[in-house]
Length: 165
Image 1: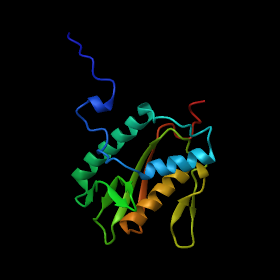
Image 2: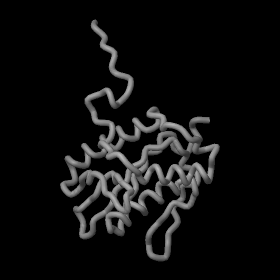
Image 3: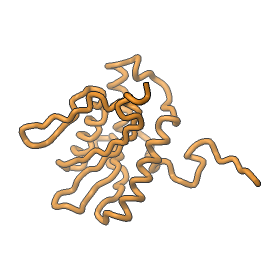
Image 4: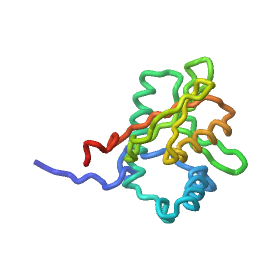
């Protein structure tokens, strides 16, 4: 038997970890900066750890491949820019009467307090502040693209943590 060691990171593999980003200011940088000022212990300054980001990019890529084979109207739109700020939405779904922004998240955050609250307009929103970064990102993408509808797909790696304890 011959064993070949694979590279350590997704960037070294043939699978593209994430779409390339242009140089300059990105929405994620702004959101992270705001969160660092609000919760400096939780959002420490420094480089983003690829051990956290690479699995999320892989999740996005898997969804992209699966959706491309099942949903003709869904695609990765690439970057958008407004007022010098680059935004990289995950997907847009054009299969319905209105375009829908699709965002995907893979997280180790707990599902505890992930209740969605029904608004009078029939829409729901996440009520716990730990999800605000997702909601800010989605709201900004909707604004930049001139859209009004979004859907969030979350993969909860540890569920509600009850079985982990």
